[in-house]
Image 1 (spheres, one colour):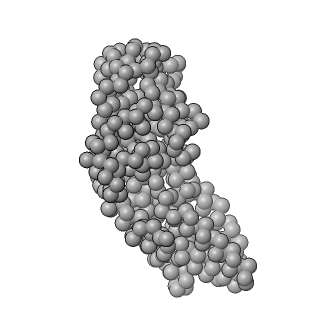
Image 2 (tube, rainbow, N blue to C red):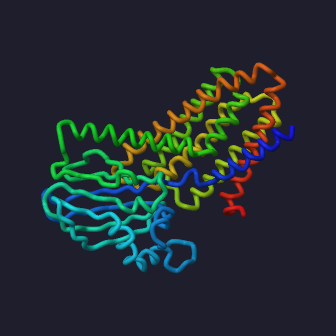
Image 3 (tube, one colour):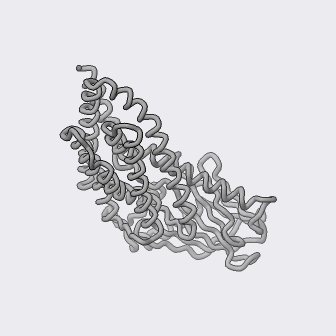
Length: 365
C-alpha cells in the first residue's frame, strides 16, 4: 500500500510539473515577399507570442509585467538587434540592408515587420535566434515571391532557409514543399497532444469507465467533433479569443478534468457521457485554438489548421489505441478495476485541481 502511495505521489508531482505550459506556442511564423517581382525591396513579417518574445529580449520596458504597445515602441532598438540582427537576410550571396522596422501588439501575439534592400537572386535567411530558444522551437517561413509556394520549417539544427527568386528550385518543388509543410504542421499537432498532459488526463478519465469498443468510439468521436468545431471556428476568426478569455478557457479545461474525475468516483453509471464529452470537447477545442491563434498565421491559417488538427487527431487516436486494451484487461477483474478507477481518478482530480488554481489565480508556490 505504501509503495502504491509513493508511486501515486510521484505521478502527481510529474503531472503538476507539466502544468499550464502545455499550451504555449513554440513557433515563430515568418512571411517574406517582394512587392515587385525582381525588385530590390523585400518585406518580412514575423509573428510570435509575448512569451516567446520575452525569451529573446526583455520587451517589457517599464517592468510592470504587462507588455503594451508603448513598451514595444520604447524597445525598438533592442528589437532591431535582438530579433532582426539575429536572423540575417541575404540575396544572391550578398547581405541585404535593413531599413524601417515596426512592432505591433495584437490580440494574442506580437507582430514585427521590416523592409530590406536586396540584390536579385535567391533569398537566404539564417534564423540564429533559434539557438537561444528552447530546442522545441521552430520557425515557419511562408514565402510570397511569386504567390504562395508552400512553407518551410527551420529549427536549431537547420536554421537556414532558402527562397529562390522564381519560387521554384526544381521540378515539382512547390508540391513537395506543400507536402513537407503539411507534414510539419501534423508534427506540431502530434507534439501538442502528447505534450498537452491535461488533454491526456481528460482522455484517460473517460476511458477508465468508457465501457466497450462501441461506447469508447462514441466518446472519442464526440470529443473529436466538438474540439474540431471550436478549433476551426476560432482559427478562422469566427470566434475571437483574447488573453483574458484564453486564460479562462484553460481554467475551464481544468474544470472539465475535475468534473469527469469526480463522476468516476461518485457515479455508478455514465449514460450521459457522450453528451458531456461533446460539451467539454468544445472547451478543449478553444484550448487547441489558443495555440494555433498565437502563431499569427495570416493567409496560411487553412494549411496550419488542417495539418495541426490532423496531428492532434492522430495523436489522440494513438493514445486511445494504447490505453484501451489495457483498460479492457483491467475491466476483466472487477475488484482490480474498481481500485484502479478510484486511484487514477483521485490522481486526475488532484492534477485538475492544481491546474485550475494555477490557471485561475496564477502560479502556485
